[in-house]
Amino acid sequence: MHYLTDRKRAEGRGAAHKGTEHQWFMTVSSVALVFLIPAFVYIFGTALGRPHDEVLATFARPVPAVVTALTLVAGMMHFHRGAKMMIQDYSHGLTRKALIMAAVFVSYTVMAAGLYALVRIAL
Picture 1 (tube, helix red, strand yellow):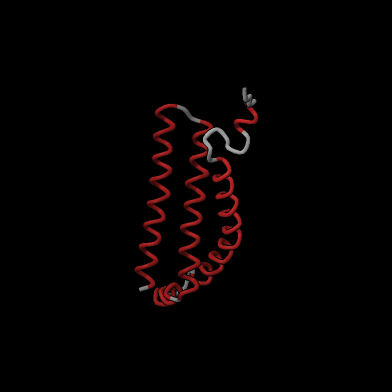
Picture 2 (cartoon, one colour):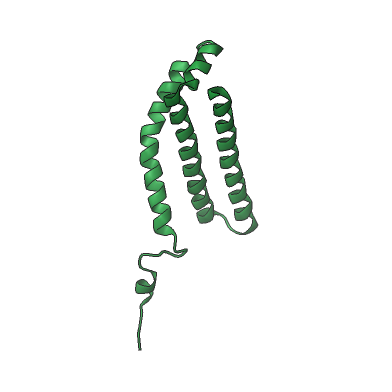
């Protein structure tokens, strides 16, 4: 007879079997955002207050466009996963489902709108 304790059954998997994957994603995206946010703030700050043509020229260059796109995608995916986890911890029932759908909708809408605007500027 093979006996497994509760701890042994749950070790390394978490309740949803995705705890390690979620934690790893949040760690990697946090480290990426540590470098991306200051770079984006610098790029955006240098373009702020300039004439329209100069702003378009700034974001039409490859490095500012890529940094902006990566910041949008990494930031919104980090928001999406973090908000989902927070909502799961602190709400229940239909409210939980509605809040999770709202967080997902907001994150993907902001990401799509930002990337669309960036593509329009860059091309």
